[in-house]
Length: 121
Image (cartoon, rainbow, N blue to C red; front, side, top):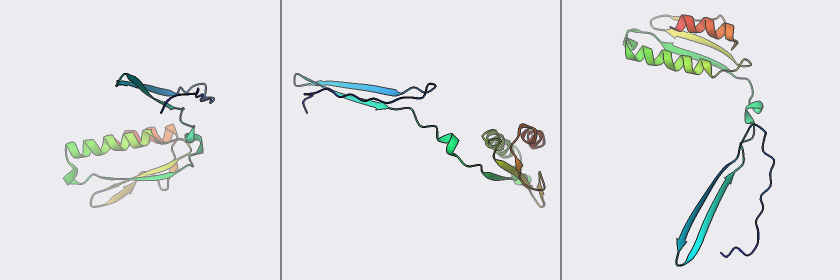
């Protein structure tokens, strides 16, 4: 398709976000073709996310010995680190019995999260 007029794309990005742009060109049969892809910064959807309650269940039975329990603990630490202070959480450990870290889900504050990290280690 011949480019017989200008194309102008205008938007206002967030000050801390930057757009992503890629330009591809190809010369074929004496003509140059171009493809420009411009992605505006993603909207701040994080502010729209509702608080959530997450209950983590970790198996520490004999079958989880060694690398399996190490991987489960690492996954739990990663998941805990991704919680926000408006989220609530609890951790339930099970083998032949079950124990909850807290009597009920608690806010994901640094105090509650750090207390859990020491117990999950």
